[in-house]
Length: 397
Image 1 (spheres, rainbow, N blue to C red):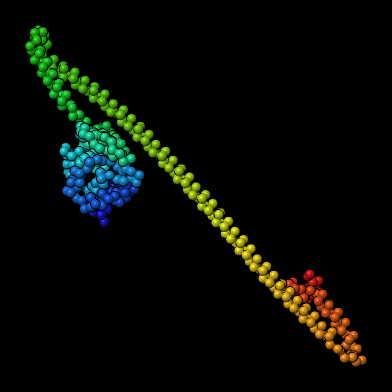
Image 2 (tube, rainbow, N blue to C red):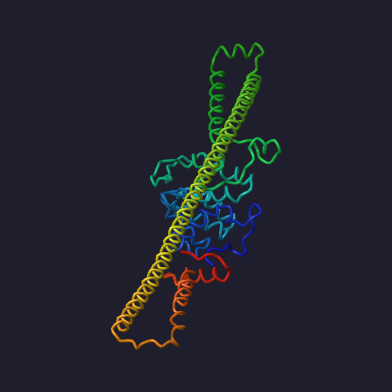
């Protein structure tokens, strides 16, 4: 895979070198076009050509937080892990300033504490201008010494969390580092020596100095006295600078604590906004669930009304059929009566008197049968009346 660390690479600070870059930023670099096209297959030798083409530095920019080519090359160096000599040559390169900053940034991420101070502090004397790309996508002007000071004093640089570095005075107290020597100290010493020589020449030529000399004041003793006085002044200046450095370190620690508290407040606000958003989504889901339940109840109510309407329609059809059947039977009975009334019946024989007497009884029995409600036009009510008649109850009307 093109995104894997070199198998021969060593772990740095107890982890994979690429893990020094946060996962989100690392995934954005893997998806960047510059990484896929320009950084594929780079080695420690070919990486120099790409570093010489850099024209700005920075972390991520824009709304989608795109990584800069500077960050892509930093991740590529963590992936292939070039030798320390190559990184030192990057730092000592005076011709290409972005190559120097690239090597210094990599040394700050992977180097030991003593190497960081030994190789990065001399870059305080480099005042060349650099182009820094801000998070909004705009460019601003900075200098090499400002970038080095940010690497040595800050916890974050170019959207990357830097490994923690001990204070310089702590390393000096432990004997791991020598006291810092300014680049201007040699110039000051040369000027002091010139002044001393000029004073010596003036003292030889001056008559007053000769008189003092003959009175027992030796120029060698004077020089020794001046050197002791200069040494005392230098020690006093060093103590004053050392105290100022400690106060500056305290101020930086205080500022770092304030930034950390500010980041904690931002994280707390972000978590609170996330919880509010989650509660809002939960309320929206509950509201949608209630609306769905109401729609389901309305659908069931409409279905129930439709079934009741169909059942009533079937009942009305059955009633109309029974009514048509009864009317038809009634018409057939009237027709039979007319035929019987129109025909001449023979005379009754005396033997038929018993049958004529039984006819009123049969009519009464028919009326009694009809009075039990079994001939109701509604078939359901007629069925219920049959059951009630079998139980000896009154029929339904």
